[in-house]
Length: 502
Image 1 (cartoon, one colour):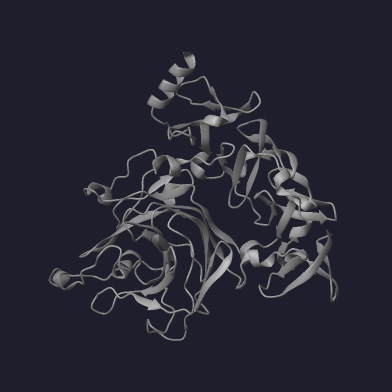
Image 2 (tube, rainbow, N blue to C red):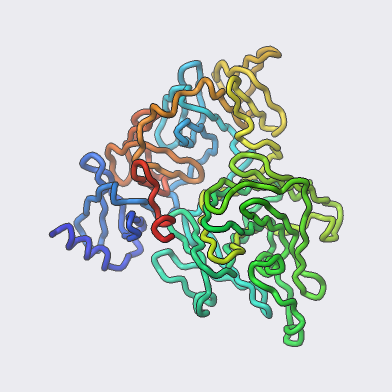
């Protein structure tokens, strides 16, 4: 009775600014307050300053805990990390490696010792450059745009997810909007016509990576190097504007201005240059490629990676780590058809088909060093692959060790020694890795900023640190300063608001 009464008070009481964490239940409910630790084995202790006493929740009731509005108290300084065979990405610097174990120095848990056969990836210089954005963890990092014939695209800032989204777009009847929830953006509308955009942050040489899930029929456009500039249209010119229909290529300049736009379908992809001509009319032009066929189906999920270089004109697409298509644009001409069309530093998404639910998550924007291969292509059965940081040179063989900041590689051409700062990535031979079937089920996944995720069985801790049992590294005491989210998933199924709302 007391527990029920407290829950009723919690859910009915408005959020106060000092309670910066949010707890999201599996049934879709959410509760603001303060994450105060893990007690009594694995119970979650939750407090609110306006109520007083805390309440313990069973992790089986919880889907996510978003900490400090998705912002870290202190971001990790380094991007170097390792990848374990259970899917974790543990940030840190490899201090020593031999045939049996790896010593990883971390900012959040000190020195960790991990069996070598539990590690499939070492990434001293991940993605070839700085990670400029990793999210989404907060709604206000993104904006929404709609095409209005006379005034061009207009933007609104979405409100925090617990509030109704208000503003120019929301005031219009039956206008669809994107929904931010937890660590993903959702498009759940039967109608179309609203883009989700990020103005700024895409460098000249960029990697844009995101996880995409969809149902029914996939038809989604992804813009990059967008400037969002719209032409000035006077009262006398309104009737001369091209009739722009939502879901067609002519609508794309109204969302993104001068840009490149990749259109993803279930079985093929298309790339457009978008801009306006001198009369202010939208002008999309298709960029040809030798092969644009894909097999993604009517419902599913995929990891999408775009690599684009404004300086050389290269645009490359990977899906689930496999090469799909490449386009080459000239860069020495000012004409739209011959030069590199994308002059801005923004990006965006827009669904182009009715009744086509979409979820976008795990968005990463990073600098690209020009590496032409997908990460998956670097891993083979019987050899370790070392990729150097220049993006092109690689060697196959057996990594014998890492000591005093240098890696020793034994290959068919002889033995080599490389300083770790010259190495971008190492993929260990699949045949030398442990069997994943013997791994224990994980009950908690902790996301770090700007990169990293670690899973394990929670053992205890307060709001400042968590102790948990990781399958590879054993027991870890993790400082929570760089953590932005705790994720709880039921064993054997994945239940989130994607499934609840659809």
